[in-house]
Amino acid sequence: MSEEFAGDVLLLDTENGGQISVINGLIMPDKRFTTSVFLSLFGGNNNDSGRVDNNKTWWGNRFNNTSEVEKLVSRFQSITKTLPLTVKNINLAQQAAKDDLSWMIQEGIADDITVDIKAVNKSKIELNVVVIKDGTLIDKGNWTLQWEGGE
Figure 1 (cartoon, rainbow, N blue to C red):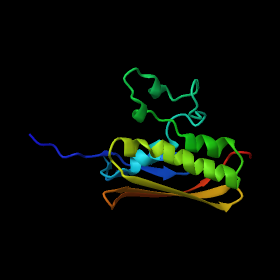
Figure 2: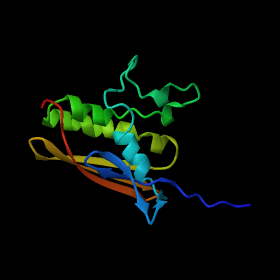
Figure 3: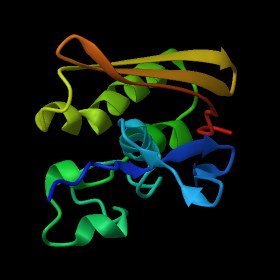
């Protein structure tokens, strides 16, 4: 018996975090990688900086059978919530987002991930993520969000 992959539950970005997508009473699937990218950047414990010996890791990361690539750390989210919005910290956040998404390259899902962050104003940024496999776009995400650090 062959089963078609239905994907993850489709999570959409809202002002209050992620929201599942329900249409006509049915939970919509995500057959691309939109939900995986969203959870990699905004999932886990937002107080988890991703540093070693950190006791603020998300509880799901503590299971013995959770591999390193499966752990939700969200270094990107930690930077935007704890550090002030400066050019230096935008560069740190951009690298942190790439690190949070690097599991996609390690698992062979992607060959290249591009992350671009631009300041919209003194407390808001625009985050753009492009995921490429074999020269083909497999996912693209755009978020405008508050940079809460230093407020």
